[in-house]
Image (cartoon, rainbow, N blue to C red; front, side):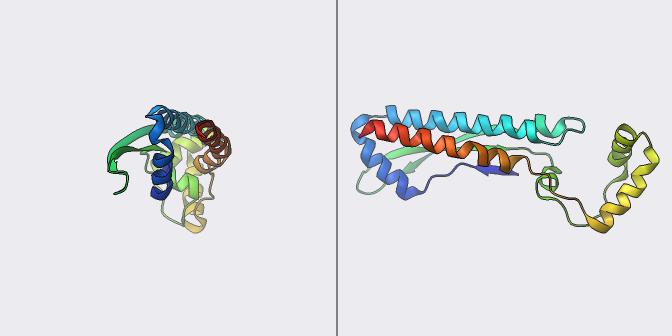
Length: 165
């Protein structure tokens, strides 16, 4: 599960036209702010993630990907398209974020959870049966973090772009 920060290619073309006279300084500031926003999403999501053993929150990472792309025929150049990915490789993360349909959950992790949370390992079978009938409710942690960070991120990007004009 991951959330990507994306910018429309038309916006990149317009931005590159506007910034061509300013070298890479402004583009670097924008990339830097995007990186800060990704780290902020990671930290908020880690705090919001349900804590059983702490694996989910501590597994959330930020990955930077850059690849060279053509800007446009008119500009005849290339730029780095940078994407920051915030997410986790844990298989159960999506079920926590979005909830799950009824399914037969593995008993071993449920036993550990029941012993730790309820003090009774045997209660895991009842929990397993309930999950098989009802599924699990969503406990969003990544989307709320993203939604909280984006308004401030947009303001910072607008401020950077206003400084160019």
